[in-house]
Image (cartoon, rainbow, N blue to C red; front, side):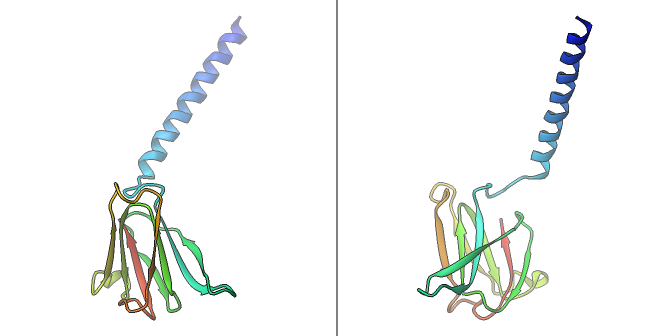
Length: 130
């Protein structure tokens, strides 16, 4: 009987610690845009000419210093606001190109943005997702 009570107390303690951990993690990992929002960039195409994308790990509201010269397209999936800039994070807002995805229209669908003709054509200095 005493061992049964000890097991019950131990399980309650473990569940309480796990609950605290989840609550703490959800406070630290807040997503303004939602977890379904992703950004990918293309720097090359396959033999058929189809752009090949690799996902970029970004945090909401934090400037991502890209500094790449060979980006040809950006795939923006989900809701949020993506700002592309030729400048570094220090001057990110100067002549930036912004793309808005409304929450009601963009859930998980994607838009492929060609950088040809944009201010970031030839050099992607930084990106911000918010």
